[in-house]
Image (cartoon, rainbow, N blue to C red; front, side, top):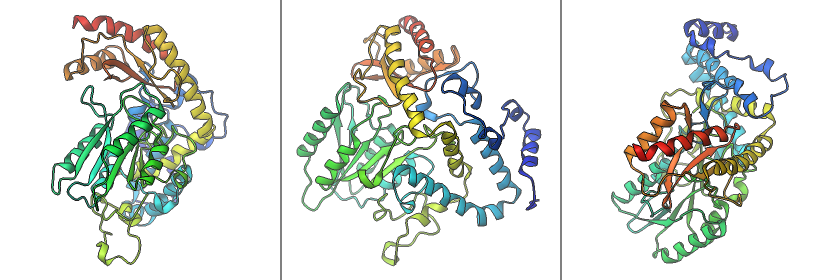
Length: 438
């Protein structure tokens, strides 16, 4: 039964009573914590995360890692929701959501009503792409690495493009070959050459899906320049920026002017896992949907405020993730540390493995670095090899940096946050020695 004067500290104590494992997490009081000086970056910060102390984690880029203060905020908000679900969903939820949208808009240089929250980048990109009025022959471009038949566009987005092109009215889909290592100038030149080869047909539109930071390899693309090319060529630009928020500093949508920009908050921003006119409906369609012919004004934000009952704590505690990062020193300080560690750690890992970094000049590197693995070229990617590597890393050694096959070589992508490059290097040496015997 909800009581307006209920003390959330009592709710937190009740949570620990109901779920004894929460005691092991040593939930912190955020107000007290943020009165203290933050610890130095690196291993000293691990105390503020719920990671297994034995786990060597160089894969923040896939799922992120939620800090304890944000977990505390999630637990408090969960109990607030459950204490009176009607009051929360009918009165408290919407103002909190607007506050989060405003904070994110300020972070990326956009207007509040240009920013909405969706469950993840894949859902956001699907929403955008499935709202275009496709017609036969309309082009959709994305980035594809032909050498191994695996797209450097994220898998689900590549498949979304394929699915859209496989159903009426069958818009055409084409791809751009990018094999790394290659420079930003080479990427832009390749992009321009591709557009010349695939000009717009009369009365047809073109849509380009552009990664800001590729998932694998973990490389920064010159996406702002590519968006500019799109504007000059009258091409719709859809930026898959899943890795950008929390890793790219000084984002400014007003200056970059992509038609759409979709990112994740759970990867690098420490949260729990913009063009409005073509968005006719959210996915799933909201009860606030108004048919385009009947609209007298925008119907964009409203459709994304309520798409059915979900756990809204992950949306609403983005503000708490930002508060935690501000306590650590803010975006520039965090990313300067991670970037320097990526550059130095990548070089050290390459020395241990006797190989090379993909990006020796640092042009492609933010907080993820790609290092070649000494796996024989005769071993190519397969589901079986992938399963063996996951078992050897996660089950046998409690460590992970994602391996991938690109441009006829094996690589590993390392997210730089803790100085564990030497440890992961020794582990990879062991695994690479064992692999030919499997």
